[in-house]
Length: 591
Ligand SMILES: Cc1cc2nc3c(=O)[nH]c(=O)nc-3n(C[C@H](O)[C@H](O)[C@H](O)COP(=O)(O)OP(=O)(O)OC[C@H]3O[C@@H](n4cnc5c(N)ncnc54)[C@H](O)[C@@H]3O)c2cc1C
Image 1 (cartoon, rainbow, N blue to C red):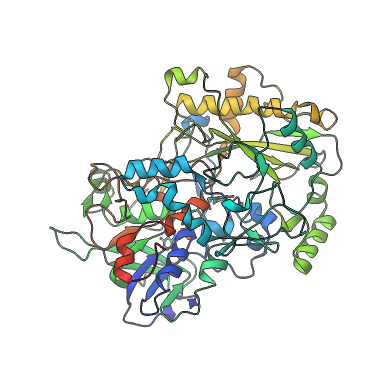
Image 2 (image 1 turned 90 degrees about the horizontal axis):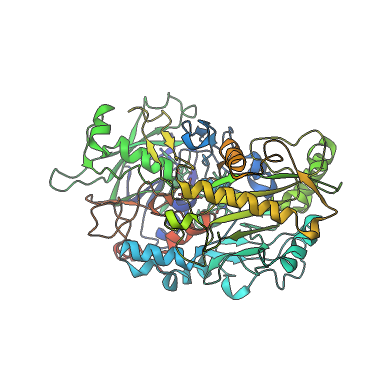
C-alpha cells in the first residue's frame, strides 16, 4: 500500500528490503521483489503523489511539470565553464515514479553496442544485449496510437514487447511537418528513414517516428505500471514525503555493512519540522539505493561513503573510502535550434491562445485525445560524424561502436525551447540537437553536511574538444536538414541571434556554448566496474564495493551514458542480472 506520511508507519520498522527512492528504478524493483508474497519491502520516497496531476498525466504537458514545480527537486548546475559560466535548472522528479513521471516520455533501449560495452567493462556477460533483449518483452507493452491509424512501417513489431508493464506508443496526431520530414528521408542520404529507432540490434541511425511511454493518451510511468500492478500486495509498503537523510552503519570495522536507513518527513510535509523527528528502518537482507544519480550520490556521501579528505572537510566521518563516488558524471546536452516557418498550422497558434489551449485541455480531459495526448515531437533521429572527421585524429571516438550515434535530432512542430515560453507572434519549427556520446565528465559533491542542502552539480559540459566539435557539427547538420528541397516553401530561416548569424565554426561554437543546456540524462556517479577493478563504486551485481547489505539500482551505475534517452535503459537495468538478489529472495527478479 502507498501511505502519505511517515507517522502512519507502525513499529518495528524491519523489512526484508528497504528501497530508498520510489522513482523509475525503485518502483520496478519493489514490484519484482514482492512477487514473492513472503517478502516484505519498504519504499521511502521523498516526493509527492502523482495521482491526478494533469501536467504529469498528459504527455504534451510534461514540459510544464518541471522546472521549479513541487514535482521537481529544483536543482541547478554550478556555473559551467564550457558554457560561458552559465548556470541553469537541472530537473529531477520529486514524485512517485521519479523522473519517469516528469520526463518527456521518449522511450528507447540503447544500442546493442552500449550493452556489449557494459558487459565488457563489468566483466559480466549478463549485461550483453544477447541476454538483455529478453527483458524488452517483459517490460514493454506496445499499444496502438490513440487515433488507431495503421502503424505499418512506423515501427518493427519483432523488436518490441506487447505484454509487459509500461505502455509504449506512436504519435497519433498528424502535424504539418510530418510529410516534409518523410520527404527529406527519401531525398537525402544524410537523413535516411529508419523504421525503428528504439535500439538493440537495429541501429537507431536515421530519422523515424518517436516511441513514447504512454497509452490511451496518458503517461505510463513506473508508478502507473509497476507500482499500480503491485500496490495491493501485503508485503509492500510505499511511503511518500519520506526524506532519507543517511544510511546507518550496521557492520564492524573489518566488514562495513549498511542495513539501516535514517529518514524524516520531507521539508514542509510533516507535523514536526523535517529533521527534528527521525526514524530508522532496518533491512533483514538489503538496503537498495534507487534515489537516482543525484540522490544516491548525495546519500552515499552523507553516510561517509566517498572521498575521505572531501568528506572530512565537511565534518563527515568516513566509513568507507571510495574516491569514485560522485565522479564520472556523464550527461547529454540539448540545444533547441529554432526556425521560422511559413504555416499557420504549427502548435504555436494553439499555445499562445488561452481559449485554444483550454479547448485542447478539455479534449484531453474528456476523451484523452488531441494535442495534449501526444508527445512534443513526432519525428526524431540519430546521426554520426563522418568517420573521416578530423576530430578523430586527436580524439578517440567516445561512442560504443559504428551503429551508435554521436548526436540526435528532435523535430518539433512549434517553438520547443524548455524554460522559455512561446514568442507572441510567428510560426516555428524546432530541430533540437543533443550530444549523445559525450566525453566530458563531471562531478556531484555535497555542499555541506546538511542533508537538506542541495548538492553541487557540475556536469562540466562541453569541456572536451570532441564534445564541442560534435555539437558544432550537429548544428551544421540541422542547417542542412532545414535547407533540404522538401522544405523550400515551408522553412523561412533560422530564428534569433546568434543562431541566424552563426556561420563560421567559431560563430557556431559560440552559439553552442551560449545556449546549450541539459537533456536530463545524468549517469555514472556510482559506476559499475568489474569485481576485481580498483576503480568504480558497484560490482556487476550492483552490490556496493567493500560494503555488505547495500546495493545501488538506478541510473548512477551506468559507467557510460547509453546512446539514447535513459529511462528505457534504467527499466532494463532492473530486469538485468542482480542474480544474488534473485537467489536470496527466491523471486524471479532476473527472469
Ligand atoms: C525533465 C526530464 C525529462 C526527461 N526526458 C526523458 C525522456 O524523454 N526519455 C527518457 O528516456 N529519459 C528522460 N529523462 C531521464 C530519465 O527519466 C531518467 O534517466 C530516469 O528516469 C532515472 O531513473 P532513476 O531511477 O535513476 O532515478 P529517478 O527516477 O529520479 O528516481 C529517484 C527517486 O528517488 C527519490 N529520492 C531522491 N533522493 C531521495 C531521498 N533523499 N530520500 C527519499 N527519496 C529520494 C526521488 O524523489 C525520485 O523519486 C528525463 C528526465 C527529466 C528530469
